[in-house]
Amino acid sequence: MTTLAQTLVQFSRTYLIADAAPLSVQERWRSALAGLLGMLLLEALLTVLPLAADTRRLLAPAGASAVILFCLPHSPLGQPWSIAGGLMVSALAGIASGHWIQPLWLALPCAVALAIWAMAALRCLHPPGGALAILMASQQAGWGAAATVATNVLGLLLAAMAINNLVGKRQYPQCAAPQAAAKGPRRVATAGITHQDLATALDRVDGYLDITETDLVTVFEHATENALRRHEAQTCGSLMATEVACVEFATELETVWDLFRGGVRTALPVLDRSRRVIGLVTLEALLRHVPDGSAPLGVRLRQLLQPTPGPNSNKPEVAGQVMTERFTTVQTGDDLARVAALLANGPEQGDIPVVDEQGKFAGLLRPNDVLSALYHRQALQQAQAA
Image (cartoon, rainbow, N blue to C red):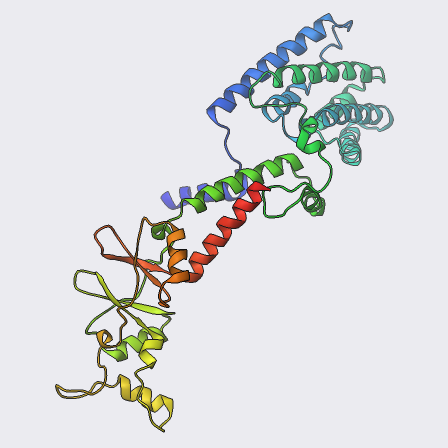
């Protein structure tokens, strides 16, 4: 039973539940309050307008439009042309289908299809328009109903403009925002991306995206700010590699060689029993001890790696005898700028050991990782300043 429940939950999350950011508590209250005030204002407008009682609420999908207008005021689906154009062409599609297509079961699908085609062609897509087209076709409304729809639409837009601009953190209509009206290749804080780049990217997506270019710019700018803060907060401890091969002073050279062959890139930390770094073994330092001679390199390397029997030896036998003691360590809390200075002025040691507050080994910093992080930080700073 548990397995079945887990399967159903996984199926729902994968195929049924949209991966959308949830609204905050404050935004939920703002949306609900805006919807309440907006519909009250619409009712007041319809009451004072000279409309017959039986046609005053002909615009039944106003509730669906209100969800978009007052909960998603920045959506392209809720902008004035989407509301006015989408509802009006849908009403006309429904009226035409109801009068010219019989029987009714055929007129209703045709009304919806015609409404979709017209809204897409005129770039005024508004989902409640489908419901309005069905309503007009099913009631076989006359052409005069279009005037009533227009009156309702006008009242709905006036309510949306009045209420949304009174609610904090909102601006309606969104298409009047300065960013959307800006012309030319103004850069956004995304490493050289321009508005033209975003517009081209949106055009290449062969489908409708419920996001404006302005919203996309805002998302990119917030993401860039967050990335910059994250890069500025990076320390040696957050960037270091923790799964690192280490050796002791008495580790045999054959074991050291096997570690290098197994994937160690530049350096092996040599630790004492307290896990303090006492040296680094590099591949270059190891190969410097290969004996001279006319024999092939592989033969001479095996001579170095093979342990010498007996108590005496004229060659290195363990890691501590080939390690370098000229190295620098950094602490986990150090900023990457200090590491950059070490790479520029310090010894040629490759990887840099990182120690904790007690001086014990914590990990290794790869020079390439440090340079990459510093490059991204600089690029983000330049993009934000642009």
